[in-house]
Amino acid sequence: MIEKKFSIHDVIASNGMKFLNRMKIYGFSFHCFKINSLELNKILEKLSDVDFAIEIWDVEKRDRQHLIFQETVRHFHNTVASAKSLVEHTRLFVDEYYLKNEKILSSYNQKVLYFFRIMVMPQ
Image 1 (cartoon, rainbow, N blue to C red):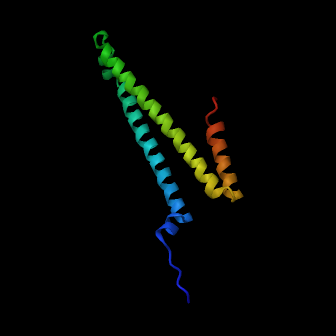
Image 2 (cartoon, rainbow, N blue to C red):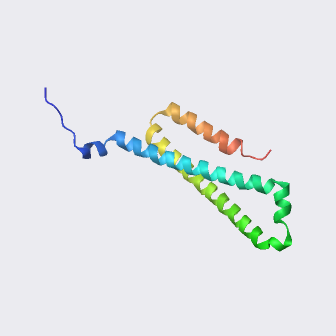
Image 3 (cartoon, rainbow, N blue to C red):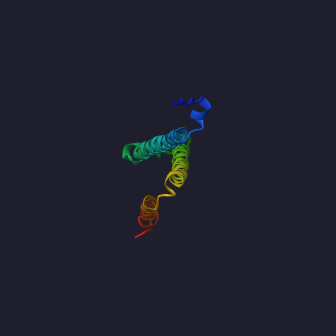
Protein backbone atom coordinates (compact mmCIF):
# COMPACT_ATOMS: atom_id res chain seq x y z
CA MET A 1 0.00 0.00 0.00
CA ILE A 2 1.33 3.42 -0.96
CA GLU A 3 1.15 5.97 1.81
CA LYS A 4 0.12 9.43 0.64
CA LYS A 5 1.87 12.32 2.35
CA PHE A 6 0.19 15.66 2.83
CA SER A 7 1.97 18.94 3.18
CA ILE A 8 0.79 21.88 5.25
CA HIS A 9 -0.07 23.58 1.95
CA ASP A 10 -2.44 20.70 1.09
CA VAL A 11 -4.16 21.12 4.44
CA ILE A 12 -4.44 24.91 4.09
CA ALA A 13 -5.87 24.58 0.57
CA SER A 14 -8.38 21.88 1.58
CA ASN A 15 -12.15 22.32 1.56
CA GLY A 16 -12.18 21.54 5.26
CA MET A 17 -9.88 24.46 6.03
CA LYS A 18 -11.95 26.74 3.79
CA PHE A 19 -15.05 25.71 5.74
CA LEU A 20 -13.35 26.34 9.09
CA ASN A 21 -12.18 29.78 7.95
CA ARG A 22 -15.68 30.65 6.74
CA MET A 23 -17.11 29.58 10.11
CA LYS A 24 -14.56 31.78 11.92
CA ILE A 25 -15.64 34.78 9.83
CA TYR A 26 -19.28 33.98 10.47
CA GLY A 27 -18.61 33.58 14.20
CA PHE A 28 -16.77 36.90 14.30
CA SER A 29 -19.66 38.63 12.51
CA PHE A 30 -22.18 37.12 14.89
CA HIS A 31 -20.11 38.14 17.92
CA CYS A 32 -19.78 41.74 16.66
CA PHE A 33 -23.53 41.98 16.06
CA LYS A 34 -24.36 40.46 19.45
CA ILE A 35 -22.04 42.79 21.40
CA ASN A 36 -23.09 45.88 19.42
CA SER A 37 -26.79 45.17 19.93
CA LEU A 38 -26.27 44.53 23.66
CA GLU A 39 -24.42 47.84 24.03
CA LEU A 40 -27.14 49.68 22.10
CA ASN A 41 -29.86 48.11 24.25
CA LYS A 42 -27.99 49.08 27.39
CA ILE A 43 -27.78 52.73 26.37
CA LEU A 44 -31.44 52.76 25.25
CA GLU A 45 -32.54 51.26 28.57
CA LYS A 46 -30.61 53.98 30.37
CA LEU A 47 -32.28 56.65 28.24
CA SER A 48 -35.67 55.11 29.06
CA ASP A 49 -35.05 55.52 32.79
CA VAL A 50 -37.20 58.47 33.93
CA ASP A 51 -34.78 59.61 36.64
CA PHE A 52 -31.88 59.58 34.20
CA ALA A 53 -33.92 61.41 31.55
CA ILE A 54 -34.86 64.15 34.01
CA GLU A 55 -31.23 64.47 35.06
CA ILE A 56 -29.83 64.81 31.52
CA TRP A 57 -32.55 67.17 30.26
CA ASP A 58 -31.29 69.90 32.54
CA VAL A 59 -30.54 72.93 30.35
CA GLU A 60 -27.17 73.36 32.00
CA LYS A 61 -26.09 69.88 30.89
CA ARG A 62 -26.25 70.43 27.12
CA ASP A 63 -22.67 69.18 26.66
CA ARG A 64 -23.51 65.93 28.43
CA GLN A 65 -26.68 65.54 26.34
CA HIS A 66 -24.67 65.95 23.18
CA LEU A 67 -22.17 63.28 24.27
CA ILE A 68 -24.94 60.86 25.25
CA PHE A 69 -26.75 61.24 21.94
CA GLN A 70 -23.49 61.03 20.02
CA GLU A 71 -22.73 57.73 21.77
CA THR A 72 -26.27 56.49 21.09
CA VAL A 73 -25.91 57.23 17.38
CA ARG A 74 -22.50 55.53 17.35
CA HIS A 75 -23.93 52.38 18.95
CA PHE A 76 -26.87 52.43 16.54
CA HIS A 77 -24.53 52.76 13.56
CA ASN A 78 -22.30 49.92 14.81
CA THR A 79 -25.32 47.65 15.34
CA VAL A 80 -26.70 48.32 11.85
CA ALA A 81 -23.27 47.88 10.23
CA SER A 82 -22.61 44.62 12.06
CA ALA A 83 -26.11 43.35 11.17
CA LYS A 84 -25.41 44.09 7.51
CA SER A 85 -22.08 42.24 7.72
CA LEU A 86 -23.74 39.27 9.39
CA VAL A 87 -26.41 39.13 6.69
CA GLU A 88 -23.80 39.32 3.93
CA HIS A 89 -21.62 36.62 5.52
CA THR A 90 -24.68 34.41 5.98
CA ARG A 91 -25.63 34.83 2.31
CA LEU A 92 -22.09 33.99 1.20
CA PHE A 93 -22.07 30.93 3.47
CA VAL A 94 -25.42 29.71 2.16
CA ASP A 95 -24.41 30.33 -1.45
CA GLU A 96 -21.14 28.49 -1.00
CA TYR A 97 -22.38 25.46 0.94
CA TYR A 98 -26.07 25.06 0.13
CA LEU A 99 -26.56 26.46 -3.37
CA LYS A 100 -26.58 22.95 -4.84
CA ASN A 101 -29.03 21.58 -2.26
CA GLU A 102 -32.39 22.84 -3.54
CA LYS A 103 -34.36 21.64 -0.49
CA ILE A 104 -32.21 23.55 2.01
CA LEU A 105 -31.89 26.59 -0.27
CA SER A 106 -35.67 26.70 -0.78
CA SER A 107 -36.29 26.49 2.97
CA TYR A 108 -33.68 29.20 3.61
CA ASN A 109 -35.19 31.52 0.99
CA GLN A 110 -38.69 31.00 2.44
CA LYS A 111 -37.43 31.97 5.91
CA VAL A 112 -35.68 35.07 4.51
CA LEU A 113 -38.87 36.07 2.70
CA TYR A 114 -40.94 35.52 5.84
CA PHE A 115 -38.67 37.36 8.27
CA PHE A 116 -37.56 40.25 6.09
CA ARG A 117 -40.57 40.92 3.91
CA ILE A 118 -43.68 39.68 5.67
CA MET A 119 -42.82 40.30 9.35
CA VAL A 120 -41.19 43.68 8.74
CA MET A 121 -44.09 45.12 6.74
CA PRO A 122 -46.19 47.60 8.71
CA GLN A 123 -49.56 46.32 9.87
